[in-house]
Length: 173
Figure 1 (cartoon, one colour):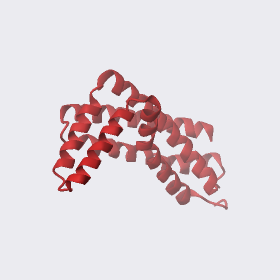
Figure 2 (cartoon, one colour):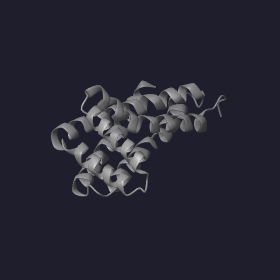
Figure 3 (cartoon, one colour):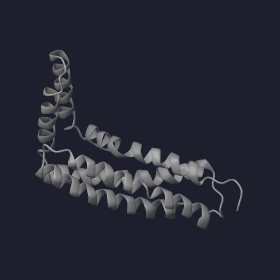
Figure 4 (cartoon, helix red, strand yellow):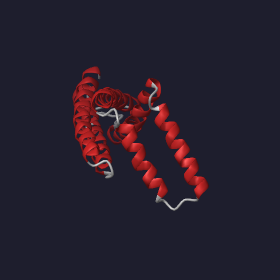
């Protein structure tokens, strides 16, 4: 199981990290567009779609055609954790060395969206306060790391659940 987790985790992680570079470039070039978010989340979904062949391969080639839900779920979580960790490390490098003004640009875009949202002045004020608080929190390393994991790891959990359900098999075929 370890070999499958490491191989597919690294493959998924390298893919999502590479696409993050593309996404960050697009955000930097087009800060008012949401194209970078579309590319980023599409890359996450594609990277985690590798859980399906990984789970099937583990069941059929390494586990004699049998796999419990728990085994499949642990396999998926391991792959997701490795891919997510590569994502967090990549974003840390990109953010701190190449896009230190990311939060300023992102916040400016969010402020514009809130202002044109048609919300009441009280709700706009509350959202702007929350946004300012998030921007300040993003400067704290533990918050930065947890927020970055929170972007990607839940998607991996969902894909792990689905692939575990799809490929579980209690009797050898």
